[in-house]
Length: 309
Image (cartoon, rainbow, N blue to C red; front, top):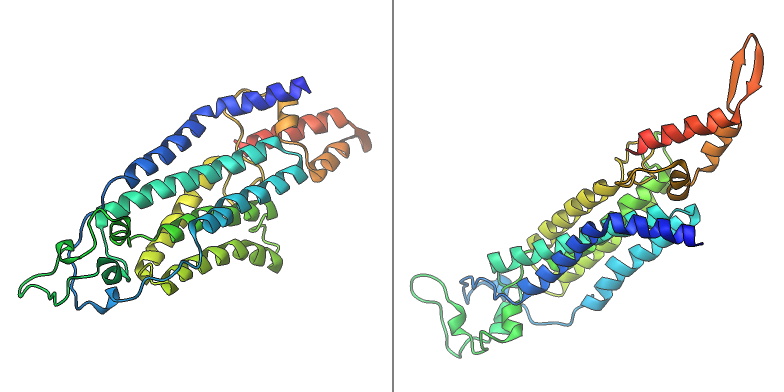
């Protein structure tokens, strides 16, 4: 057991820089949250800003459960079924990169653009009898609510939708992870694979729609947020896994260390197919069949290494 624990520590230690970067992006996100957003001018006659403040259909805690906890649980189940420590590590690391990078970039965009939410005027509570200037637009100075009030500050953070980008960053990543495990593009045409791939994406889409229905975002906020989340999810997935068109797409990239044969067996347990291939490896000489299991296993191992890299 100590031997196995040593290997696990080696794997985590090699990628400690990646985890530090993830933590740094999360810390940066909380730092950016302290910055007041740009106060974009607006019109009191703009009907797209006249919606009432409503309760959230998907609060932040539920978003975290769906986009963080659920993917981790599914990745843990799949990697446990494969008895692969590396798959769990890289699967969760890729998810962490996707989510942390998304929330950091989303917050930068929010405070830079400063777009008012659809319920902005309800947050603002303009002075009684207030009207737009004869030339130009109104500013936050027309609001009776203090500019330091969190409700008004958040009212300038419509673009892009954080719920949309975050949900797609987590659930689109999960879709890619499952697609790799199913060999979705193996040219065999299994319809069930499409449904499994689409279920997490449907969850992210419903979360995005809820933000429009709750008057928290304009549809363009959710659309662009979803695109950002999907793009970052794909980027993070490809950092640690091959293309879905690769024959070894179910296996993560080789760790950034020199591995012995025993390390390879530990991090990349042979599949039933590869074991069968190794056991049945034969050489044909002068019409006779000579079984050479050692050579077959060695060749299979070399092939797996070359395909993973």
